[in-house]
Image (tube, rainbow, N blue to C red; front, side, top):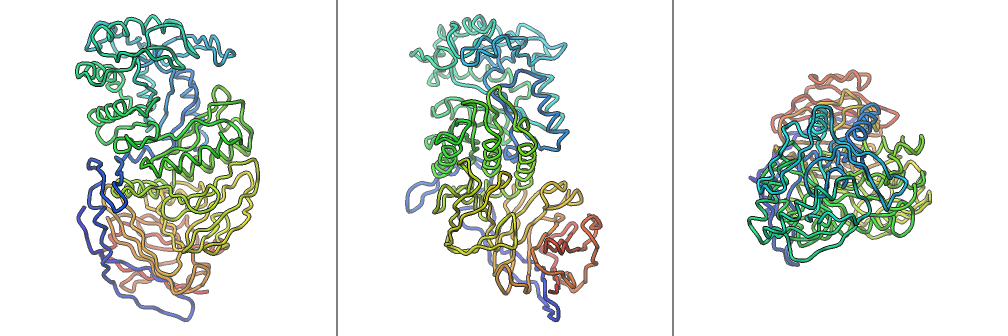
Length: 614
C-alpha cells in the first residue's frame, strides 16, 4: 500500500468564553513499512529481531459477524426456526454453520435427507429424523465408481433450497468436514440409517485407486482412512467431492482434526481457488498452518465453571493469538449437562469479545435464548454489540494480516487481555459477580458501563460484575469506529445507518488508523487536558469520502460546532433530527456526548471546528 502524508481535518470543542481558530495542518503519519502489503495479497512471514512473524491470511469481512451453530441441527427446518427467531428478535446473523450430521455419510459431501439417528452418546435422541431437503429436491447419490463424482440424480439436489434461502437473507453457510472416508462399519457415537451403505462403496473405490493413506484410523465417528495428500490423482478426486456442495453455493468448511498440515493447506488452497477472498474456513489453532488458517476455534469446553470451562477457553484463545492464529473464537461447549443461566451469560459475554463470534450451542440442550429473560437479554445485547464493532474488529484483523500483530494480547493480571488497541476485557470465568482487574501501565482506563469512572494505569481493583456485565474498559484517548444501524446498545439510532459511527474519548493527543480494504482513514484527536477535564477538543480525519456520525465524549453542552473554514453548524434538539444529507450536531447532556453528523466528507478537503461550553 502506498505511503502517504495525510492532511488532517480538525473538529474543535472549546469551553465558554474561549474561541480557538485552527488551520488545516499536514501530518507525517505515514504507515509503517511492515504494513506495505495490501490486505488481499498472499500471506508471508516477516523477519524480526526475535524471529519470523506469521502474517495470517485475511478472512472475508462478513466472517467476523455472528456465526450461529448447534450441536446438532436436525435439518432444514431446525435451522430456519433459529434464523426466524433471530430475525424476529433483531439479532444479527452472518453465517450458519452445520456440524457433523449434515451429510448422508461423513465426508461424502451430500446433504442428508430423511436419515434416522442411532446414537450411543445421546440415547435419548435415538430415532431423531435429520432432513436437510425440501419438496422437489433429490438426494445427490454420487456414483462411487466415478472419479468425477457425478450424480445419478438430477438437480435440484438436497440442500439447495436451504442454501438459496439463507443466501436470500444475506446469510452464508459453512459445513463440517474431516479428511477421512469411513469404511462403512457401524462403530461410532452416532450412526444413521443407510450411512454405512453409502460410505462403504466410496471407501472401497478410493482405497482401490490409492486415494487413501495406508493406516486404518478409529475415531469417535467411525473407522476409515485419511486422504492421501501425496497423490495428485487423489487430490483431484477429493476436490471433485468438495465440488458437490461448493458448486451448490456452500461458502466454506469447518475442519475437524484441523491440526494436520497437509489437510489444512490443501483445503485452504482449494477453497481460495473456488471462492477467492470470499472463502471461509475454520480449523484448529496450530502454528504450522498459521499462514493458511483463516478462522480458528481454540478448544472444546465444558458447560460449567470448572477449569475446563470458560477459564480453559480464555487461556486457549490467548495462546492461539500468540501462536500466530489471531482470528479465534471463544468457547464451544457441547460437553456436559444443561448449563446454568450464569454460565450462558458469561459464555455469551466472552464470545462477543473474541475476534470470531461463534455461538455453538449445547448439544441437544438449548439455544442461548432458551434460559430465561436475563440470558435472552444478555445474548441480544452482546451479539448486537459485537456486530456494531465489526469495523473496529476488521481493522484490527487487517493489521494482523499485514504485520502479524494479534487482535488479542495478554496483559498482566488474571486472565485478562487487550481486544484490539482500545478495549481491556476481563472475562468472568467463575460463578461469581465480582472480578479482580489489573490496569496496564501507560494509560488511564474508562469504565464502559459508567463513562464517568476512570482508573489509573497500574491500579488493581475489585470490579463489580453483575450477571449482565462483563468487566470492560476503554483506553482514554480511544477512537473506535462502529457500524450502527439501530438503537441497540446506546451508541446511536436507526438514523446512524449509512454512516461510519466513531466513538471518541478525548484525552491528550491520540492517533488511530482505521484500516479497510477500500482505503484507510487516519483519525487524530487533541485535548489540552485529561479525559475528565472539560477543555478544548480537536478531532481530525482523513480518508475516503463517506458520511460520519461522531460521538465525542465532552461532559459539556457545546456552544458551537464549526467547520474548519469557519462555518457554524446548526444545532438540532436530538439525534432523530440529524439528517443524512446535512452537517449538523446535537448534544445528549445526560450522557455527556456531543453528536456531529457529517455527510459525504472527504476530510482531505474539509476542516472542522467545534466550540463547546461547560
